[in-house]
Image 1 (cartoon, rainbow, N blue to C red):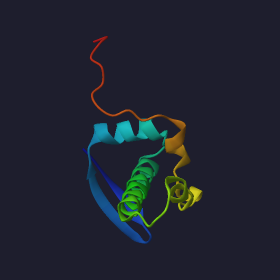
Image 2 (cartoon, rainbow, N blue to C red):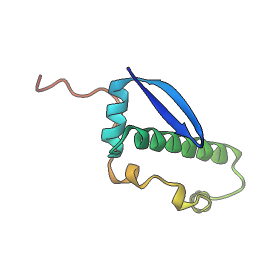
Image 3 (spheres, rainbow, N blue to C red):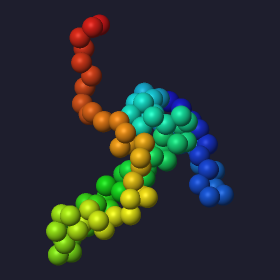
Length: 94
């Protein structure tokens, strides 16, 4: 387990983070630092939560209008460049 300080604005935080999970996030996002990996993961979760909220409310918008409602600058380009797969890794080759 990694304990690392994380600076938010002017506030320093100590977080307990699973080493293997952090390594997978870094690999999936291409992040070069632990801080960047955590920042990308948090921004992606926030983006998904906002998308879920908007789609559940409906807002009377079509799918294409909902897509246009998001600021493209809020998307994490690092996540778009690599496909992310979920689930267990294959045990072949061991």
